[in-house]
Length: 138
Image (cartoon, rainbow, N blue to C red; front, side, top):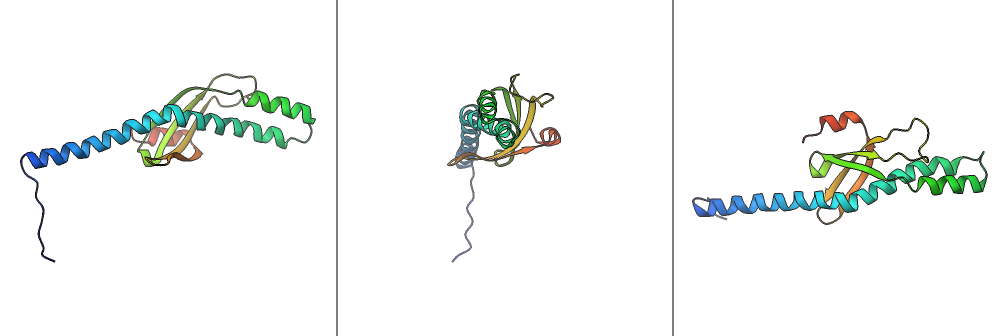
C-alpha cells in the first residue's frame, strides 16, 4: 500500500465540517427528544419499582394492604426532568411530584445515570449521587 494522505481544503473542508457538526447535532437532538418521551416513561417505571419493592417485601402487612400500597406507589409521577453530561454517560435530575404513596421523608429530587445509543435508546439506568449531577459537564 502506498502512504497516500487525504487532505481537505477549500469547499471540501467546509463540507466535511458541516457533515460532522450535522451528525453531532442530529444525535444530540434525537437523544434529548427521546429523553422527554421514552426516558421519562422508563424513569417513572424505575422510581415506581423502587417504591413498590419494599412494600411487597414487607411481611408484617396483609396482602390486601400491600396490594393497596403498591397501587398507590404506581401512581408516582415525575414533575421535572433535566439531563447533563455526554450522551454515553448522562446524569439525570428527576423531581417527583408530591404523592401520598411516597414514604415520609422521601427525597423528591433523585439523580440517575444512563447511557444513550442511537439504535437502542436510553439504557443502563442506575441511581447516582447529587455530586455526580454537579460534576457532569453541561
